[in-house]
Length: 118
Image (cartoon, rainbow, N blue to C red; front, side, top):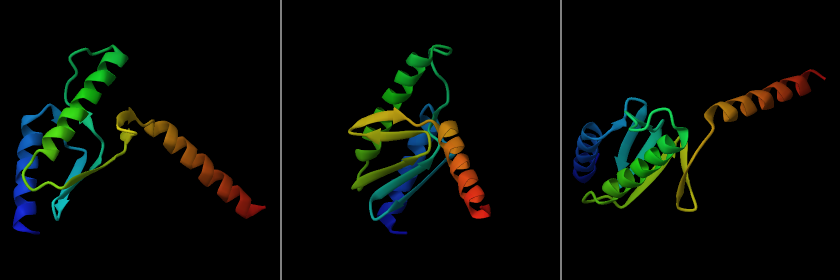
């Protein structure tokens, strides 16, 4: 690991610890100034618990602020997000239905298995 990457990693770790982000299900790494984040993006607490639309907006705002802070770190050239539950589509953060995706994958596997037995 390059010294610059190590410094970026330590800044990123500090940022995650001080934020309202639950980073326990998230992995991150840095290679030649490019920050990679993957796993589940979760906010530790929502100010409007119970109202789904407000919670979603809060998470989206948190993602934008988080992205901006990472990109402002010295030495960061790019950020690659590989979250399972959120993706960036045309500059907008959109939630990904994990359960729905898993069920579709199971159906595909089931149809592939049944095709092999015919």
